Structures are given as structure tokens and as C-alpha cells.
Amino acid sequence: MKKIIEPGIIAILTFFGIGFIPYFSGLFSIVIASLIFQLLNTEHELIIIGLTIILIGLFIPSNIISIKKINLGRENKVTTKVIGLWITLSSPVIIFSIPWILVSIFVFTVFSYSSTGFDKYLERKMKNWSDLIKDLTAGVAAGIVLHILYSGWLISPYVLAYLWK
Image (cartoon, rainbow, N blue to C red; front, side):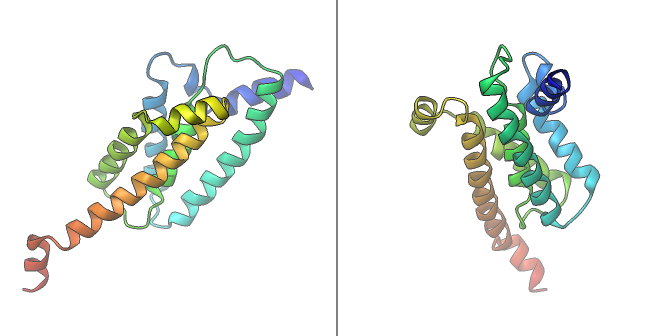
């Protein structure tokens, strides 16, 4: 049974092998997550939220087991990046077009890779859970920024002039 469980845990923690790609696995997983989002081609954010909850539900027990039994040799931030980006993309204000998806990827990447005092505090207090919490908060913060960008776009003079014609 151990021969089956450990590869499964490693597959979940590395988002089915993407985490083994050296140097750019976090950015590569963001691209893969956005492609999966685009392939679903849906305007129902509930599907993406459901997939995110399922991925969190798979990640948490596998992370607990890996903390106790498996030493992966390096930190893995791949699945947490996918979870954070899916939270950002599930924002109801995103117009499902390539420019808005690229803007949301950029905003999430800025928040995810920025380092703050909160991150250092999380690293001290919760060593193995800090990446998940950081990417969850980055996803929520990116969603808030996208709401602000969307509302600013709606009240821009060009849009208002077009609507009043």
C-alpha cells in the first residue's frame, strides 16, 4: 500500500509532475492552470471554485502525510500556485477574454512572488503551510484588485461615452 500512496502524494503535491520541472515550475504551473481554465471555457465561476476546493481537499491531507513520512528534497509551491490562480480566475468580474486572463495572471503573480513581513511571520509560525496561506491570500488580493480595475474600466469616459450614444 505504501508503494501506491507515496507516488500519489508526490503527484498531488507537484500538480501531477509539473513540480519536477526545474527553475520555472511555479510560473509553468500558473500557465497550465490558466490553460485548464481556458479549456473549460465556462462563465460559471462555481465550477472553478469547486475545482479549487477539490484541489485544496487533495492537497491538505497529502501535505500532512508528506510532512510526517516523505521528504521531497525541496519545497514545492506548484499546487498552491494553481489553487491561488484559480481563486483569482473565479472572480465574477473577469470578462472571459485573453486580455483579462493575462491581467489576472499578472496581478496574481505580482502578489504571489512579493515578499512581505506577513510571509516571514507565516514561515516562522507555520513552516509547511505558509505557501498555501500566502497563495490563498494572494488569490483573494488579486481578486480585489481585479474588482477595482473592472469598476474603473466601467466608469472610464470612453465606456460611458459609448453607453450614452
